[in-house]
Image 1 (cartoon, rainbow, N blue to C red):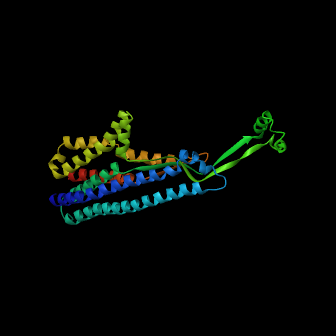
Image 2 (cartoon, rainbow, N blue to C red):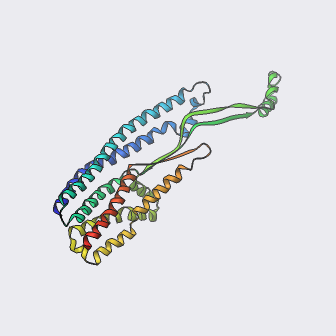
Image 3 (cartoon, rainbow, N blue to C red):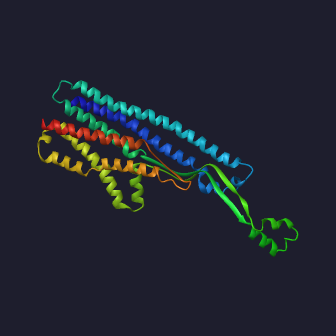
Length: 314
């Protein structure tokens, strides 16, 4: 197994530096997008007197222009993330292909492929838990706020002040409503949030939700990582796989690993949030790069475990 281990270590070292860049850029994109919502936040737009000007829309155009300029910066960073993600995927593919070519006629073919898949899964897991997994936006578009004043109240106020005799036309609005519809063009944000698995765990700890935080940390981070390391240990020392105790531990950990359940939960959350918008409020959810890498980890981890079991039995 020495050649595949050497290739795997090289892949992990190169992948580590690229994955750090992916995570940093992903968090930078999240920060920039959060900053872009500031000019369009509900409190900032509605409390801005200039945006209530029924004639000039300069303030609204300025807010939307600033938002678009900041979003352009996020798009540039996103392009870098996509390029680095492609490099990570090709690193994993290259590792598996080179492993197959090296061990094509060897009896260790399945074990070597299992090892290369486990190393790739480990690399994907690192990005999957640290990069943002889901982006959630809650906003209204072209929000219309009716501003209505009862003509009766105006008439009564003017009448009490004896102003009606100087304003004979005031009788016209006595039984009418006076006002207009104020339209805030573009988006008005109520909330924007994007978090990675590790950031979510950190927030849960800060909110004193220790039970949920420890459960998420244990079942979605610690146990999957431990399972991968034990799986690789069996491949390096095949005699461990022929014993009853060690494979039983790996099998037991697989039962308790909630990585696949987490992926399903993310899908369900994504689908449910897509249908939550109502009464002019749009709830938009979008899975981010962390989710895709975590999903790839789940698939590769399962494949590696199956190949490991087959190779040890043989």
